[in-house]
Image 1: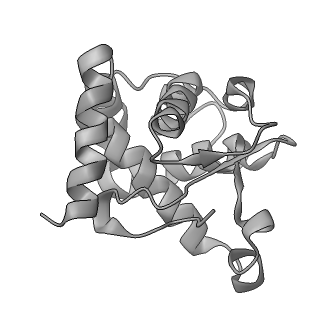
Image 2: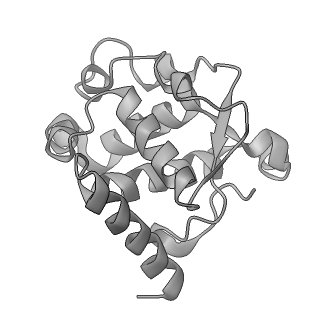
Length: 158
């Protein structure tokens, strides 16, 4: 395991020592979804750090798309196992990773950015608005600064 990955997982383990409500895999998955979303951005947006910064809704949409792609019909079951059941849980993981220096946020970023949008489990089950329903972007944004997470890449710069 490379040092940046080790550092990410050490940070996750420290977070979980304080509050173990989310499974370890949930943190890695949220960072992987962030990297996936940034990778799907148009090149001109990816090249501009200001525009590369993702909104809470964009990240939630990416989480839903990646879960469907990775876990298919089992997405809802996996997320329940990880205790990742609401969009606010995605936001809480993001802000915990910001707090420990694994992700970055702008001063105007708020937890409330993750509260609007589709019902997470219903979206994973394929009902109540799909991943595109979460593409309605609130004005505030969140991004990663070299998380050194899964894959060890910097999904959004910072």
